[in-house]
Image 1 (cartoon, rainbow over the protein chains, first blue to last red):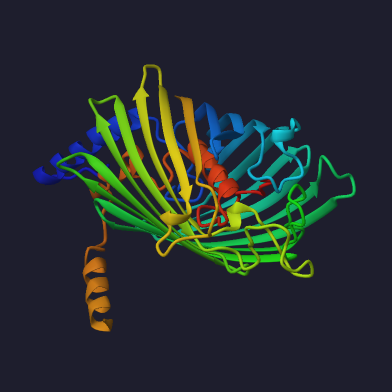
Image 2: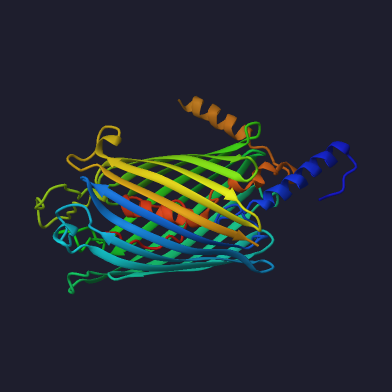
Length: 376
Length: 68
């Protein structure tokens, strides 16, 4: 910190120094594509367990148990590594009588998914360059991807430009139809700006584009026949505002998507992060999502025309979804912190302004995540 | 409508003054990140991608989804 004879400036610097010391005591985990101009000063390792259960028409559907190990650390003076390993256990029945594999007849889904990702970022004076990979495998689906990303910031570090490109290759088979042996490749692009607006607020906007070619159909759904390509564009804006008198931050996210299947979506997410009593942080959150249906979505069987694209997959219907969630975090000694998030999702046709697809059943899910983070 | 948009945008970016390093104390708080908990976000975004028709915006390395 620059030595400054001005008394007021010294006072300001002391306030900042004291504050930075306090801020460092709270495990700070920086994102890989926002706001960081150097590797983390402190390494973090996190053990996380997430649990998901959904319901429809008063029956348990899919249940997922997902432990994860996550790491973020400097591996050299100007180099960062961030990575995770996930081991999902998936069981239950997919919604609808239109599945060829159905829990109702006793043959449900019982699958394990292993996934890993890693990103190495090298920091230079005015920019950073990252290279990463992702790998995921389960009985009927394997995915591999490579990504390159760069961030460029102005000398004041108030503006950061983010760019990324990635390629994925997915291989799809079916656990009840050995003839299905398909693949698809996807190319993704990201361009974004992160701007500090003033001492209390910042805004970040990302444009992403995903162009996929290959097999998109669901082999477990009868006559599911989707186009062999999908182009999807998204624009996500995230705004953060800090309220110093009340000591909380408000996060407002908005995302719009549009794709070549005719499906558009809007998403709003509001979160408040409120520290309490020095060691606690609480975070209530509300997420509202609406989508319009894919052109070829038809919620009935059989397909009106077998020569055209068709899917009765409710995820391609028109509907609105609301998630309410609450997260609480507590700092412990020795650099540990523990957090717990609980959330509830409801998707309904009438949650969409103007209504959604007819006859789709309301869908409910609950999820929770518990995590233990150690910062060195 | 056009004039209102220009006025609103001007007011919005008027708050966009050059922020000095010593003014960034509040911005350094751990919850002032767009992604304060990447591991938690990774699970949540995978969950939404599995249950909704759209995705995107958050990052470049989301990977595929074999979601049935």
